[in-house]
Length: 105
Image (cartoon, rainbow, N blue to C red; front, side, top):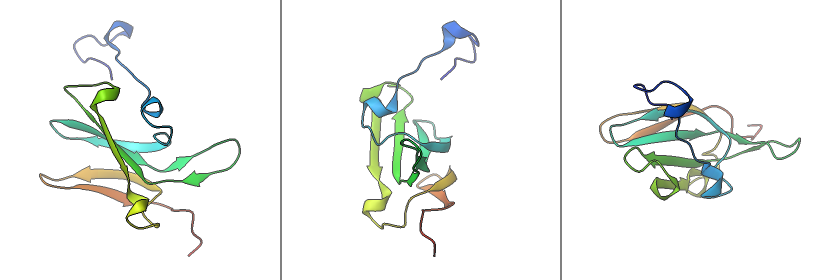
């Protein structure tokens, strides 16, 4: 993330989600609440193969570090819940917009 009050290289904070879990990579878009930043799962690209995934992750904005990460695999609920493009939030729910899950049907 980049501080809006210090919009320069010194205002940058970052960490690698994949260091929390190696499945936490390949996101397309995100959305935010007052408490969390949400990452939208789409695809892993190991080598030349493509694997659509459903690992939804969120990071606490007050603990922007690997210890502030929560995640789960939407595809464990239903194998079709993977490969999203964008999302949005209401007061009570997060929504992930389907794109392509790797299935031909």
